Length: 338
Image (cartoon, rainbow, N blue to C red; front, side):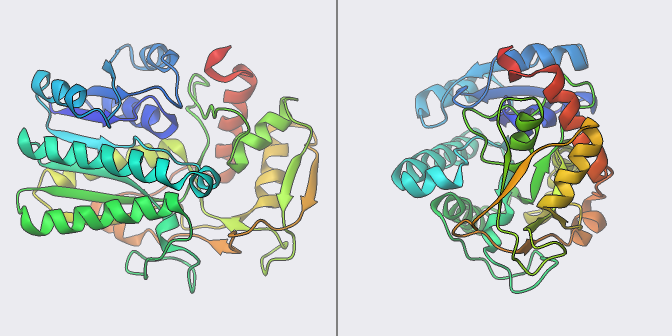
């Protein structure tokens, strides 16, 4: 049984990936500093899989603590989710983002080399494409970013490109996510952001549950189907499964590979809002607000390469995503804290 170290494995995407890994007969070791997650996630993973993975509460920026894990555990591959991820916060605190996201990754790669671990899946982002010249977006599009968070993702991609060029045994997958939403069908796991949500779906569900007054829709004058921004929303369980599929590719000594993970479809903010109302069965208030600086009109993926090379194809519809998001929120109105 192959053993997978999952950094940030208690977070939203990480925890769903851990469940998928366990269900596909991988042994999982989680490392997470719990800065934006809850230890309750371990109990939920156990309820879903009847297995509790080994967990280390460690900050990847602490080299010695991280090295102790590599000394203790025999690791076949690493899936690297850990990192700060709020765009607005990254603009306000760029140094914190560069220090955390880059140092943690450099520590990880250094220890992988030291302990002969040669397979890494990196959690990148569609933000590396910036404002694309056209849609759908292909993996060979030019890369340019507009904020420090995105810049850390692109810098880490560049680090891995340079590193794999001179380490032929080392295999890395750059997975560029689009917009994950949804939750595990059990209702036991979902997105539980600290404070005011930065993302559309948890904000809508918090309005629906009565925690927030209304959804703010930023701009209705874009050149889109209804004037609101269009994004590629993917169910978190589809996204999680993409990580499991790409491991098989890495274990063939693939070198560096890059894949978009999305549905290939774009949905507007108001289309997501309407689907959420269908899931809830009642109206959800919203207000049109001015555009936000840095927002783009349309962004969605072409995922043909991932389908051809690793067999990835999103299975869930927008209605499925909204149904599962609402199931999580109504059963966990205070997230993992309730």
